[in-house]
Amino acid sequence: MQRNIYKIHSWLGLFNAIWLLLLGISGSLLVYYHEIDRYLNKEQLTVQPGNKTLPINSLVSIVKSRMPNARGTNILHFPESKTDSYSFRVYIQDGSKDLIHWWETYNIDINPYTGEILREGYYRDLNKSFMHWILNLHWSLHLGPVGELIIALAGILLFINIVTGIIIYKKYLLKVFVFRAPMNWSNWRTITSGLHRYIGVWALLFNVLIFYSGLEMNWHAFDKSAWEPPIVTEQTHEKYFSIDALQQKLQSIYPGFATKYLYVPFIKRRAGKNSDEAISFQGNIPGTPSIIPASSSKVDFDPFTGELIRKVNVNEKLSKMNLWEQFNAVVYSFHVGSFAGKYSRLLYVFVGLSPAFLSLSGFILWLRRRHFIRKNIR
Image (cartoon, rainbow, N blue to C red; front, side):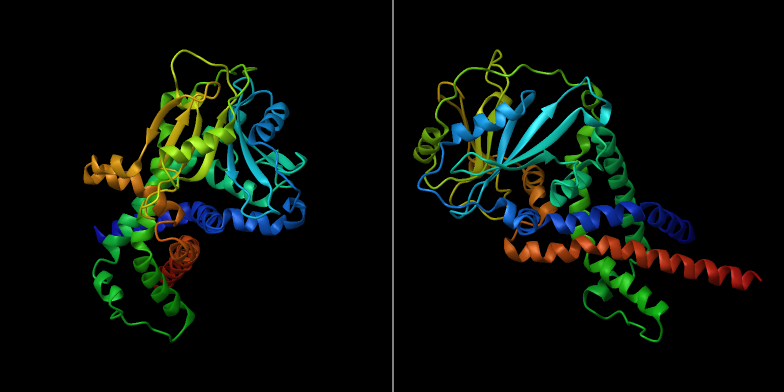
């Protein structure tokens, strides 16, 4: 049984090596997604401060005019200083295209003082933004729903790889945790084996959480609806209510609300008040623990009348959940490493690289074992 489990662990490790490298390295980069993007494109995205910024409605109108078939847009980066630009992510769906381009994301960065477009392009365009390209790779391998399914299946295989690794190293788990397992520094083979054991055990909990949360986020790939071509929806020509006024109204509902994302729909009004038809402010209410994802609380408004549609206070919501529901509500924070602020983000840079190291060291150990067996047979 132990030999069979070792074979499963070895072959899965070899098969999963490419996914471990891609997802691990890209995931480590995405921990500082906005910071790296701003650093690499500092000259392009830095603006000259003016006397007054344009209303958000004007900036949204510019985005909408550029992408007439889009469903809506999210403001992903609000200016943190007078020299920062606005960053918009635009959501496009078109079932008339080939499968991998049914759902696409588009980026537009705008000067808030002049309305000038500083940068724009699809997330799949490497020459537009390296970090957007990395994000799309991590999401779907640039293959749309096909890529999401591949990553979901890879996540299941990776989880099996982790379980078999726990079984193989079960007698070392406690010893490694308390640094009682001996390290043999005599040659590179024994060093590789020791590091594989130590890094694998110490990164175990984080990797289980990362792969579980990633699988949960891609679980929709197993849903039949994910493979039905989206219908192109007609954009609205109605005049939006003032988003700046809604921001003030938001503060009267939840004083101190820190907006992380702002979604504005472009589609025509349908019957009912659906989430994708509302101007939605997502962010944090003061007093929310850092372990809670930053977009868990939200307030939705009618985009044309400014009427309050719904409000969600994540603190009140969590109090009504059972333990498992609470865990699933915060698991995204474990995936992106934001559960303890800047300290956990820094930790996740190294945790994200651990699968890549485990795949390489595991491959070396597999070659070593194969060579040893052939040598003895001869």
